[in-house]
Image 1: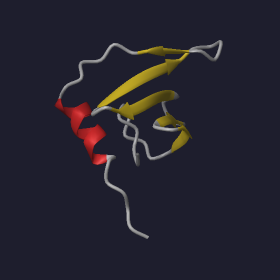
Image 2: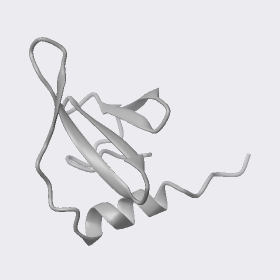
Image 3: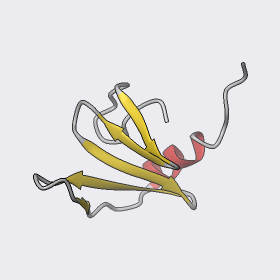
Length: 71
């Protein structure tokens, strides 16, 4: 994952297997099974899944992360 699926920022970090965090918009997301699930980080540190339509954008975004860079 090179960019955040919500805001497009490149300041993202990997926090687990197939789990990522955006430092710009403070959201987490997972990628797996051909879909992306986005979570809002709440004030107590827990996460809540955002209601999203898994449209073509998110499906395409999940698929582009499957390729690995050489080198």
